[in-house]
Amino acid sequence: MKQAKIFSVVVMLAVLCYGAVGFYFLPRATFEGELTRMALLPETLFGWTKAQPTVDMQWMAQATIREADVLVIGDSFSDGRIWQTRLTQQGYKVRTETWDSMRGICADFMPWLRSQGFHGRFIVLESIERNLVNDLGKSVACDKMQYHPNARTDAPRHPPATSFDVHGGNYAGKLSTGFRTLLHSVDYERRSRSEDFSTWTLPNDVTMARIKNGCDLFSHASCNDALFLSYDLPGEIDPSALDNIALLNARMEGVTPIWMFVPNKSTVYRYTDKQFWNIAEQRYGAPNLMRMMQRALDDNTVDLFPANGTHVSTTGYLLMGDEMLQALRKAESSQKPR
Image 1 (cartoon, helix red, strand yellow):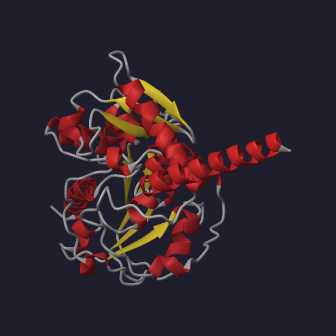
Image 2: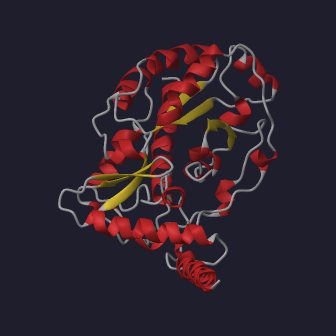
Image 3: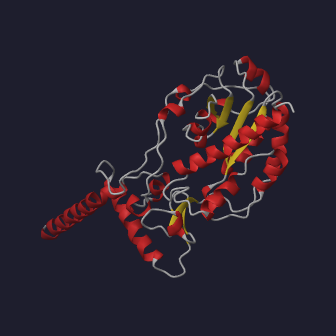
């Protein structure tokens, strides 16, 4: 009986200790970025700290399909309507649709698009690198448009935050999450002190990598290291994508398609030798976002991609917008009679 009581007390103390430690470190498990949340690493180590530019909400307005000069079809890199502000500030009326709604550039795309009331001359087709082979392949295989309307398409967008408090945690999560975040932090501190530390594979498809001159490129506390998606591949993009661009361009008679291929974060910082963007530029005049991003890093642009997330920062979006504005103006000038 005495041993049973002692055992019960020990168990209770262990549970209380676990709860106290978990509760104490729970604020560390308040995540701003996708990658810190997936890897269970605190924003105090990997959250960006340099203020980002302000975006005026008035330039994020959505045009109707009938009034649009430019139709953008893209993924989450376009859905926030941030890079598009560079176009709208110059007077272009832009409508943004997602691939989830459009599903593809099917064989009957132009008749369908005209039936919706689109009279613009330009279509921007955006895709992140990791999805572009699949996006292009699905479009080529598609015969008939099946548009899926989404109420969010025309909902207002709000400007991204210009800053956030990396220490501003709360106690709304699970105790186990705070405790696991603590263990990952301790493990990281141990690993990162090693002279030969280069990469670390974390849970939920996250990889940490040491970046050359990282503290010139990132503002987070552990600026020598950044987080990436593990499934972003180091190899060259399947060349079938380039042939599929030609097939889809042939479907868009009467408009000018401008292809916008966003490099993976891993490609920009780790796998910099890929040639897809150079070839797409040579063959189709596609804006070379890879070259633009490499130049930005050469100029020590801080947090082009924040360490804690998979998307570019506001700075990165605006640089993308500058590139697309230049491409749009170039396309316009080529259409003017000489």
